[in-house]
Image 1 (tube, rainbow, N blue to C red):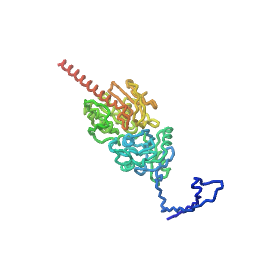
Image 2 (tube, rainbow, N blue to C red):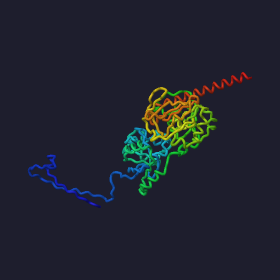
Image 3 (cartoon, rainbow, N blue to C red):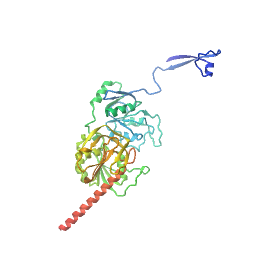
Image 4 (cartoon, helix red, strand yellow):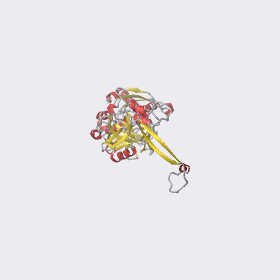
Length: 438
């Protein structure tokens, strides 16, 4: 055991006069001499965690950090999210598959984890990047700390890294591919090569997050969280799971819908056999151009029943109508994006998560842009009344908040009601025509 000694000599007068050095002469003072001995075990252990992880970006920058959650090496696209709350909903949002989510809010983990706020049955994101990890939790619903939760789900996380500097880099250069590693045996050059060799563009990510078989959904928004008066009439909705968030299904159920969730590969013909009142095309991860089978399905359903597209569903509708989509510089990720409803003139604060957008200039005549993002003017909503179609680029289910856009579910219900009345009217006219022929 190594022992080190430090010796001190202090004047009693200096201590009582709150003065340790002086050039002025003064009376003789008593001097106390004492020694402090410090011992260490020699193991080099410190009472704080050392940096043990690296985030290597494809631009060559290397960011040292401390790890929490799972260990290992993972590659993904780095995006930043500006939400102040709701990190658990973000962790369980399937739309983040293949991405490292950097939270711009510096303090994460203070409310811990509960099992009511999850948006899917697992975490799909590649990793979590934060500035400061809370050392304690304080919330009446908390069941476990964030680090334990991520470790159980094999999700990597890092903290004590300059998230402001990384965010500025992403805003300037656009989203970057990165490699997150706790493996000291891997050299920086090896990790950099991994980041330059992987690309998220053109990858089918929805097939990895979609359900495998059809199932019914019945859960509604819990009464203590309900904030809207819901209609009584029930409608059957077939919801395509491209990575659907649970709260989208809860909001539909709360508006009186009977919901059948189907996989992303479910054919249009099988859907139409179910005779739904409407079809929902959900949110999901990645590039809409990488899933032509989904575009074809959407194309074969449009015009036959009322449809509502959210996020990925919105982009697939845009392509199915003949429009084009493009990859944005760094996308929209956060719960504070202002959107203008061009029909009402109202501005909504919305929750968004997407890296692709529809180019409205490529859409055919008759398609109406209903919403625009006020940060960059991009298309945030579409309608095609002749085809009973509506879509939003953002998340009206507000998970996590705000609730400004919940009315979209009511509009979808109204669209299905109009479609039902139109069908009844057509059947009545057909019956009248057959009666005349007889």
